[in-house]
Length: 175
Image (cartoon, rainbow, N blue to C red; front, side, top):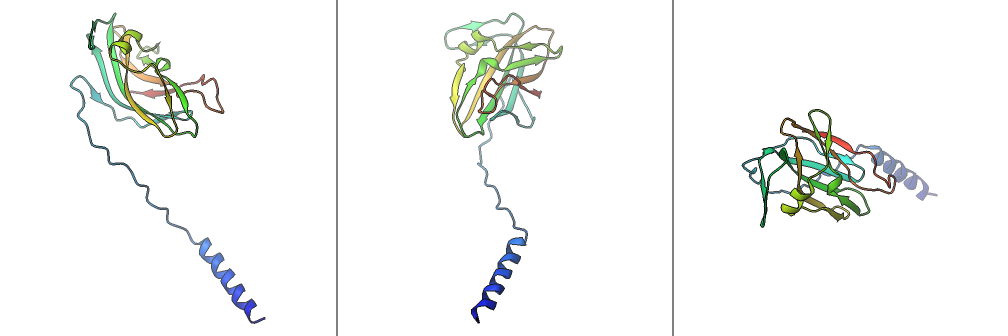
């Protein structure tokens, strides 16, 4: 019976301790080295945006490019080339089949443009890839738009998820 008051006291103390607010542990971050912005590019300062389980971070914008050059070819646009440098990160628990050709440039008139297939090939950018759990990939997207249009945003599609198998609705990111 002498043990009962001690057990009650310990139980009360444990209850009081758990009710006290806890301080969250600081979140560690990676220290990524800064890289210079390419000469024809403007660094973008837009917050990351999500579509499904994919997070998009737009890094740089180059508009009005008069041509592109690859290892074996130079190509002229019908209008002007626009390039966006971006990072995609899978924040979900499953892998996602990421399709770069679904990402749309939205111009200042509200029209959407798919990436230019030839420009993507010449610059050796990926068409599709498996974006695994917590995988982060950085690459460029190229569009060919009319000379009198200006890039206003990018409509991004992260890929199918368990809750949205068709991934019909994109997420708009303003430039």
